[in-house]
Image (cartoon, rainbow, N blue to C red; front, side, top):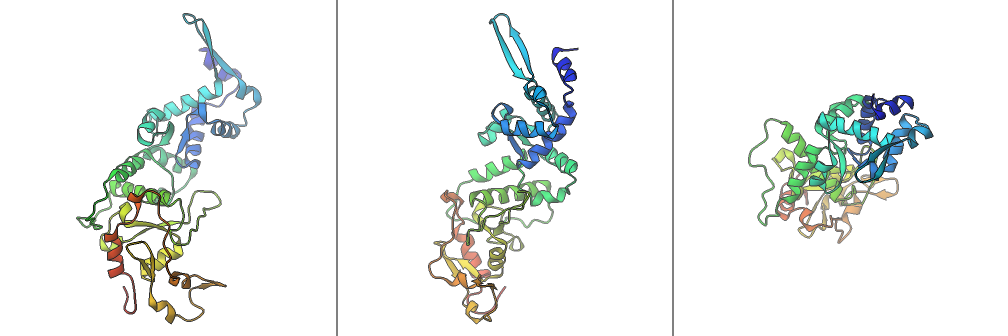
Length: 313
């Protein structure tokens, strides 16, 4: 029996498999990523708390003697167990190693893969269909997100897919999630019109949604140049034509608003729909200009969705 194994048994430490399971749950609760254990004491302690580890178990350390260098290296047994569990998950391709993730995100982190994400959902008894709305990152989605962000901003942008999507593939789903993630992060999870920023009590679901300027129904692209972050109410109002944008991102409201009954579009004393008619209102935009909606997509929305005076979609 090895020195390390003997210490694990004597201190009645959790098994590697038990730690792997909790690690997957921890990755899920941290949006799919956790830092290297040597730099993330908070996560190390949180996982230790899941097992109710006592002071002795948390403080125990291994000693490695390097005779040639005449030195002794000390490492915490609990950290070692965490690393072995994470390394085992990486061998099963359930997580990416920090050495892999840094090439993608410039951060040394353990990150869920799609298979690891599925396993975490299974452990937590959450339907896989929820992947479309949850903000959890995966290595595969991050690769697509990086590729999307690197695309050049063309002057003559075409917001339409070249071919109509007739079959939803795995790649299509991954790109859709990457698109939503990029847009929400670019707008700091706030509505571009009203600035609403809120998540669910368990922090897993953001209120803000990603709106296609040229909608999927018109074969619009899952592309940062064809997207906006909007709260649910402004997303609906945008999609049905109550407002649109000018090329300088000023809000252009439908003149039909003035024809609404006085009790329409209000939440108690707040005139939600009337606020759109205020002059010179400009939406909030991402800091990086290459993330701004493209004029070609906005122009299509003005001409095909926006209801200026009469008619409709």
